[in-house]
Length: 214
Ligand code: DGL
Image 1 (cartoon, rainbow, N blue to C red):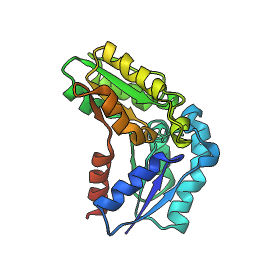
Image 2: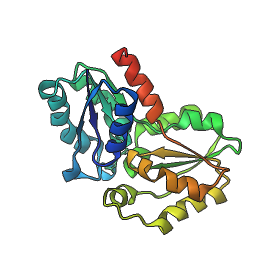
Image 3: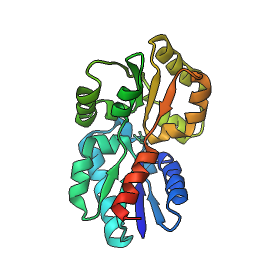
Image 4: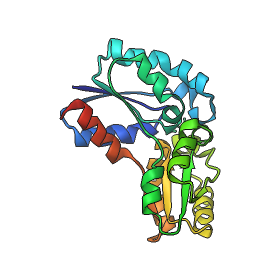
């Protein structure tokens, strides 16, 4: 069985690693688009134009059985259009607003995501459905994907976001960009025991196993 995984860059790599551990018999084919990173500053139509040939390569050349869009920016903006391009199941990464809403005891959550994700209709719909009565902090993480891609972490910038979140009384931080998974440990250290940091790799893999029937 073959699984295609897409992200603009290094965010997809830890998703690939997690899939390989969870489904060792799967052959995982990773495609990125580092030439056009960051996706987080692009419009939905720009992303669709860039990703259309990649989706076709996944099905025509790689002949995958399922595709994981390990990019919240693409998933929140164009997941339905991407599904229409191919005949295999397509699973996206989207910010875990519903789980965060069930976990928070302070009714305050923080969502770290790209500008493109925060502006998307899908994200607005998730907030309307699950976070209507919550305070949702959306710190400026617009340079994080490039910073993490270049492996040049500015811990002061990252610390500012955690502090902003703590000051607001947030007790859950949602990682809404797969690039940020790479700094999950650092964020946990900065945030301490009173803030829970969540991201959806485990539930995406559960859904992948379901569609692959394995
Ligand atoms: N890793 C991607 C995401 O989950 C996007 C990073 C970028 O290219 O801006 O949103």
